[in-house]
Length: 226
Image (tube, rainbow, N blue to C red; front, side, top):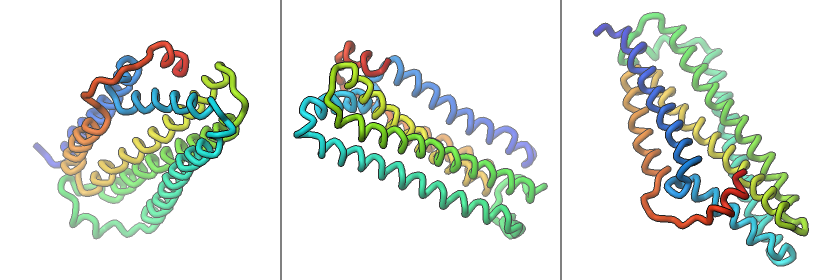
C-alpha cells in the first residue's frame, strides 16, 4: 500500500470510530441513562437542585458556591482553549514546518499544505471547545440567579434544566477538546492518529459507562429532561 493512501484510509476510519462511539453514547444517554455516567449525573443534578431549593435561606450559599465551582471549571476550559488556539495560530503563521518532516511517519508529499490543514483542524476543535464553554458559563451564571428564588414545582424543573444544560455544554466542550488529541497526532502521520482514536474510544468507554445498577424515578426524570 502506498504511503499516500494511508491518509485517505486510516484518518477517515479513525474519525468514523470516534463519531460512531459518540452517536452510540448519545443513544444510550437518551434511552438508558442509568447505564451511563452522564445520564446518572444528569439525574443527580436535578435531585440536587430540588434539595437546594427546598430551603433557599439555608442552602442558598451552598448552591451558589457549587455553581460557582462549575462556572470556574468552564472558565478554565475556555481559557485553555483560547491559549492553545493562539499557539496554533502562531504556528500556522510562522511558516517553519520544513523540519517537521523528520517526525512524519507516512506521506511527506505536499507537506506544507498538509501541516496547515492539520493545524486548522486542531484550531477548529479548540474554537468549538471555547464556544461550548462560553455557553456553559452562560447557563451556570443564569442558574446562580434562579436557584435563590422562592420556588414552586415548575420553577424547580426550569432551574434543573438550566443547570443540566450548563453541564451538557461543558461536556461537549470537553469532548471537542478530546477530539484535538488524535488530530494533533495526525501531524506525525496517519498511523499514530488512527491508533490514538481507538485508544481514546476505549478510554472514554471506561469513563462513560457504568455497570452498576442505579434506580431512577422515571416520573421525576422525565419532568426534568423534557
